[in-house]
Image (tube, rainbow, N blue to C red; front, top):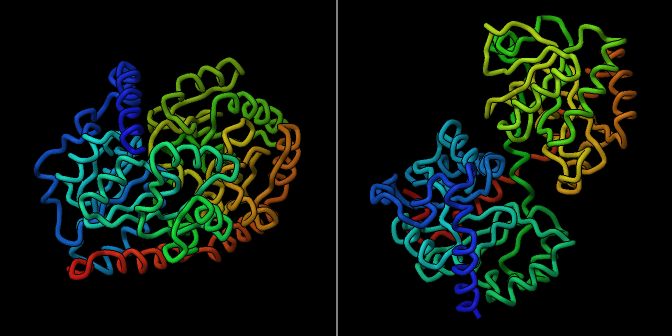
Length: 426
């Protein structure tokens, strides 16, 4: 059964090769993706060697609190961090100081995963969410590597697809030593897919630990200047927006200006390469706009486009009011708890399917879900007229985030338990 999956993975790879070689988001790091890592990677730190994989920048940030705990509990350990996206690599190299090695993950091909295991030589492979890669898991098992899934998540609507994949590839869950699930419901789903009951634990979601609980920082005023936001002006930040949402938000902003003429808008697209298009949309609406990367020399403008990576949390700190994107289009939403952790009231649209747990935590505690752009305009306008209510909702949001932390420490306790004896401390 696995041989058929391995053959199918090579055939699919051959069909997609032209896209992989020339697509601007996928063409980087091809040798690494083929498992051709530098020999020096096998000397990246001490023991135990723990390979932590997250698909994107956001996934790696969710893993970072665990990395800090692992370094504290096992100071000599070597942390190998892999990801799939270019933005994930850039963010990890810039912000994850705990990592001893940062590199692209191998394609899920038998040869690539086998070479990766031989060079990186992990004692433990930690996968996140639904990063279930059958060839990678098989290569790890054949190399004697222990395997854990953290922040485990299996979409209820995709259960038939998981079952079909597992029938085609052989059930990879049987090779996983430890399942650290986000909730009781997720634990029930992984058990239904064939996980061994004595390997399944409900520990929560480490992304909540990754949220930085901060008030104003010393550099906030300087950051405002870099963003072209005059001191004292209220700031409406729309974070992680997707195509089709900026037009809506620019229209809402124009209407808000009638009653709040000093209001400034910051648009932070989920993909920064869309920044030029957003500038054009603002210009077409008659709104002076600038890029954050232009710095202080560009001066103030009505609209600022955040076109840099890793600064969204800092931007949320200087916000008066926040809207989180991916929720007016069918993308399933984005992280609403990040601005909440900064003590800001958070607005979001109707499509939050991928963040249902976050919505449950925040609604009624500083989070407000709006069904339409018209409702967003109404709620935002009312809040901007009531600064005391904004402060009250922001504090509720911060308290809601504070109450749900602690999954990282629980996960690390389990991970250290499954590392082969004699390697869990260095």
